Image (cartoon, protein in one colour):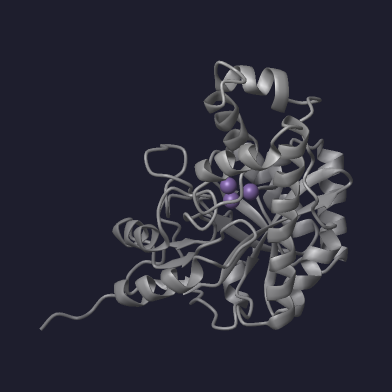
Length: 295
Ligand code: MN
Ligand code: MN
Ligand code: MN
């Protein structure tokens, strides 16, 4: 007789599917997660829950626990900031309406870019860019490809240099809501707001501390302490900040596509000791013993 052994936990709370800018369909993403030994996954597509139904079906079949997830864009003092939302009610009507608004914000920006780059026929340019965007709303890289196709520029580089790079007409800022508002959406939908990849915004230590303090005041509950492509020094800094602000700690690979050695599903450095893992505070908490990141 064999005694069944508990699988080590492998928790990844940040990744993307084709519902936003990821390369794998929600089903393929769950299959890869399962192969990588991930036991608990949150699929956190940018500003949409469109991948969650397929992800849930696949997760159920594969025996992976799926946690509701999303990654919301917002603005804090003119910086674009990402908030990962976890374990919310995905049927909350007001939350779904807010997400529709985020989606419309993306399209409004896409239409603005098209209008700035083509006064003669913005609709044709938008259609070309949209064709390159897959299921996503077209952004600057898609417009760059469209401009190449139209023969306006000879390559992507030139498209950015002349039309889409910083300070050029196609460099249209996104129309995102304020940080406080986005955090409130998540909290009111019963979810947990996590400040995503805090070191990616390239803020000074002072500014980052201000951001985290404002995030906490707004009702934010957790900091993504462990993420891909981060140094040990960065993680130590974030762990300290997390303790000082009395926030829970999250971890996620921010996986977008296979083949990137710096970012793979479930391959995340273990959270430093002394932090409160965010998954202990889910509606159905993940067991506190035997936590393991899989790294
Ligand atoms: Mn992304
Ligand atoms: Mn992000
Ligand atoms: Mn992400």
